[in-house]
Length: 307
Image (cartoon, rainbow, N blue to C red; front, side, top):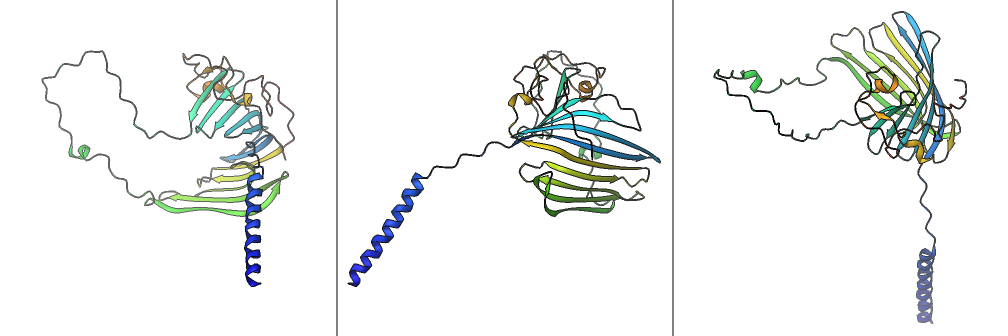
């Protein structure tokens, strides 16, 4: 009797194992999540105190993200305390290639810069067709003992500091503008041996949990320690719409000319473009003026009043 009961238990265990294997094979795999994307609007208030005078400025921005591409449209910069020339531009940050591209609808120019310095050794220079210089009868000067030893060692970067403090801490989880966020607080102080007071920079931010390092709010202040200058920044996202933006928003417009400086992009008299061919429509970079976007400079969408 016990022998039959043992066989029944073994058979039941085999049936359960086979059932689990069959269900695992027949289960439909969940589809991969789509790339993260959104469009948004934001604003920033900047207050600067310089030599007893206070200056302020308000910036309004359009934002968009598609996978590793982040687009920032400067919609307007205004101030009640100082004249600011009209500036509208688009910046594209490519986290895949670590580059930033700046583009302007008015000047029809663009500029691309690497965010990571290149430490590789450059290519060897091409041989020159110019004749070699003739040997001089004068003896060449001998290198000094100091130069033969190479550059002087500067020692520790902290030896000339009186104060150095750097902290980064998480302040908790909350909801900001309807999105789950994580708070971070940053505090940095540094004072050189000959400085009268330490430079102090603080920042509090709420980062969106659903996107990579996307700040929903930033409150920052900077005091260089000289006593003649201080600055405060208050930044916040006003609205955000989930969804993958069109790929056409992240290409350089056809016919735009590449230049060597961002000033040549922002200002028509910034030295003029270099002799480079116009951009093709498939080149990576900011959006074309005719593509849909969070608020392109040619037809900016109304932005909410800053908080």
